Image: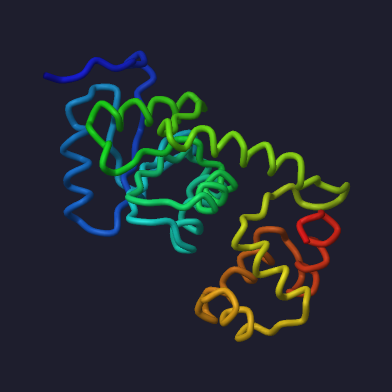
Length: 217
């Protein structure tokens, strides 16, 4: 029997794009959501500002974080993350990307997905009970420990980015940072390049200076 969940007026239907790493997962999600008149499924290339994106992943890595930033900060959509597993640090990183609706993949019934999508559309949070306390604690730490000095961009840094910058500030090169954090050199370079672009800074030295002045390191 189909579960009853909160609906929104059909005049405010949610345009949803689905992002997965494989066609089988995508087909499964689309099949689950087609039954709801509140959801208008759109191709990923047809997104406009104000829509919702649903991203399905196994775990949170740098590729996931880059995708979430692109969806939320570049395309201006609200995102729902469906994930198999996630560490506490990953939750902090995902929150830093602007995501407040998360669903464990094992709990991703049609009704559960719809609830998370509607919450994201309204700008509300929707987290599994076991993540809610951790999320609130982490967000409090983020707000209290990351002031935004005048004249600096107001873009939060993830824990991964802070780790890279801390080692860069200590004089380690890309290879040494990669070894210390068990990342590839390409990942470290991508983190630094993304920070330089996102914060509109000039180079690696400028990024480290920003992090020091902003209180991240």
